[in-house]
Image (cartoon, rainbow, N blue to C red):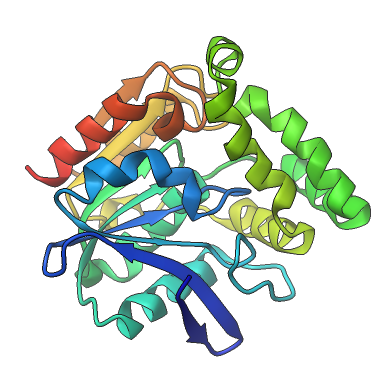
Length: 262
């Protein structure tokens, strides 16, 4: 896969779809890589040049000493856009990717055309949640990541979907087991420290909020908070847990495309 060289390492990316079409960036959740969006690629590349990338600490991208910050991850993406000569793009991010999208829309508004924030919140969790996870992963290494993989199934997918669709669930949770423990822990700190609750009013990009009715991590109430504080934001809810793009599949893709092409 192609990479862009940052000051401290390489950022892995894929750029697909018709040259000259508007650009859509997809940003992965904590513990996954750019392939978490595979189900969306056929539909999205009919209308967009699709830019997927592995966030720092994930997939085939650089793993540097932590902790990281959402600002750092946002600046990585700006460097990628600059390297590819992309002045402006629409952005769709899920969970941690949604935090990156909020940072970009607040701090680099001229780069964002339209914004889709999926299964995310202005603030996700508390130090009491994140710090023990960081300690466990750093002390337990690869085994701790495999344990997290098993625990993640109930957070990422509703029980009925996990039971009925193992072929869709297994490749996604396998990404978590394969994620660098150091990169994962460093990004846990980035999510822990991010708080955009007081800054959401600065977002001016047209925004769609996507929620999962069965999401135990970022609830529909978190989504409504975003909608209430971002001017003109729309909200849609699917029967899904945390990874609504995988569980809602075609319905997710159709709704996001309808918003992006409005």
